[in-house]
Image 1: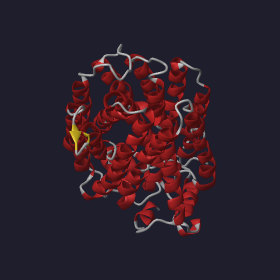
Image 2: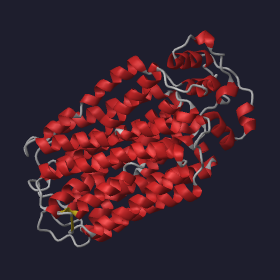
Image 3: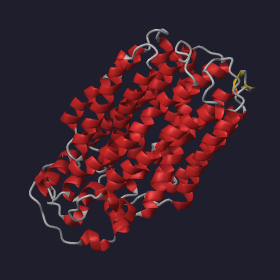
Amino acid sequence: MFEILDRRTSLTGNQIKILVAAIMGDALEFFDYFLIGFVLAFLIGPWKLTFGQSATVLMSSGVGAILGAFLWGWLADRIGRRIVFMGTVLNFSIATGLLYFTPDNGWVYLTVLRFFVGTGVGGLYCVDLPLVQEFMPSHKRGWVGGLVTCVIPLGVGLGAVLGGTIGSDQWRLLFAIGVLPSLLVLLVRLWVPESPRWLCRQGRYEEARKSLAWALQMQPSELPLPSAADAGPIVKSNWLDLFKHPRSLIVSWLGNAGAQTGVYGITLWAPSLFVLLLKVSPQEASRMMVLLSVSGFVGRISFSYFSELLGRRTAGGLLGFGAGALTIIAGYHYDSTLFGMSAFWLLLAAAFFFADGGFAIVGPYAAEVWPSHLRTSGMGSAYGFGGIGKIIGPLGLALIVGSNNYLKPDVPLTQIPTAFVYLGCWFLMAGAVYYFFGLETRGKSIEQIDKELTGSVEVAAPATVRQA
């Protein structure tokens, strides 16, 4: 049945609807996630926050993302992609909305609610990419997977634009706007059916045929009834089975850890660092983030193309080595100018082409290197383990600079170069892991990847059909 899908040369209107739902979900979830970076730029002065307190607020969502990625990813393999997708959107939207009620000097309240924002964001990212990939032909999977992530910088950019236009005492409005992604749940209920490959794995073959027929806009009777040969035998996912695939584990876990540590360390701190280093207002710092978001957007489009042109391994190496080198150079030029502008700002924008743009590889690839019955569990485990970077990225910078220093423009920040060497080395590690240890998945169908990972004997094994 899935051979018919792979022979398609263009996407149907319904496949585009699935793609649009995932794109909107990613953009809005990261708008919610990165709002705190812009809000913090308004609070560091009035609340007299230390680097340590600020890092606690920033990294709390990273702790939540670790738990959310593991939990939601496991649930998506157990109960289905669609219902978990909707659950994660409601999770981070409601938590962000409650942040509107943050009391003055309530950095502890911020920390707790940001933890719950992280659980939803970590979960959605691990569910929507596999869901989209399982509806797409293999020759478009890399490009489409990258395209889903392309709009994430636009979500960050939306936060930057809003942060640059509101008054200093109106930062709570940003959190109120963060409730809007919950409306996406209605679109998912109307547009997106359950993954046909997940349904096959559950033995629900007639439902799988109807789901794929809807996506291809044809009658179910025009498709052959799928069997175990289409998506492998009926398998109950077991989290411990992840350790039966050590190469997938190493590549997806370490690649995510390196990329997330670097990019979250920069993105969450950048607005505040612009205020401190460049002596600009919080509104101006937010506007400066627009250039970084545009660079990341262009990078994601480019890396979506690179994933098919160069292959996943080479493109992954390019993101790590490019981002690492430029991040380190930016740190050493934090007080320099270039063309009459801040060299630090311009170099970070260039670094974001690789650092943020490379996530068009990081996310989709983390799903591709796992067999079907472990796809969201595997991606969730990788994103969850990588979520350590959401903690050690911002926290590492704070510790190197001095966690007890108050965030004031007159604080000497001579350790900035060292902090950016620290972040850059994480990118370099990710590049090395992808390039030297990665599994090449370009041009391979999901079924072919399954056979390579689990062995043809398992895929061809007879399976008992369960009733839906």
